[in-house]
Image 1 (cartoon, rainbow over the protein chains, first blue to last red):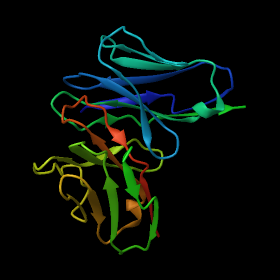
Image 2 (cartoon, rainbow over the protein chains, first blue to last red):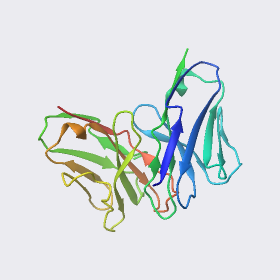
Image 3 (tube, rainbow over the protein chains, first blue to last red):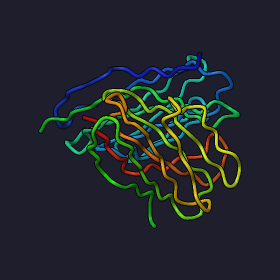
Length: 111
Length: 115
């Protein structure tokens, strides 16, 4: 059965800390992995990763995919209170539009 | 509009009543998805529409759930005879194409509480 597992489930840090969120997957016919940030209700798109070892970066956020070990990490440096959210990882198996979502990592950044 | 919109944003209903949730996708997006997110859980796929094709209803949890999409745009998710376990956030997403890796853009969701 295809599955996506995220860790940790929750994390509390102080402003300025660096965090690493993990997403591992077991999906047949893998093509891509997506990261979303969910602050209140609507998940907003962060990154889509398709190639192993190539880092995607946007400001303080970066992500990389390891297709051999079947995982991705999302790094946030110099965290701010506005980074507090649930971070979701999703994998759409090839040939289907049914994204498989992990349960997310709830990040809380304290001032 | 600029993004996916959903209404109502919150809905409280009594057990046994019917509810209708609305989704207005991004203009031009042919694919539309409904998800359910229960407290502390990931997103659960419910139903998928693509243009005029028959929808994929394989994620609907019971026959109390139905959805339609009129004119290839607005979609309505209907839950009949609501139960307390239906309480969740219902999220709608749309994408430009049908390819599985196409980015989905989510609406703000409808938080449903069944008393």
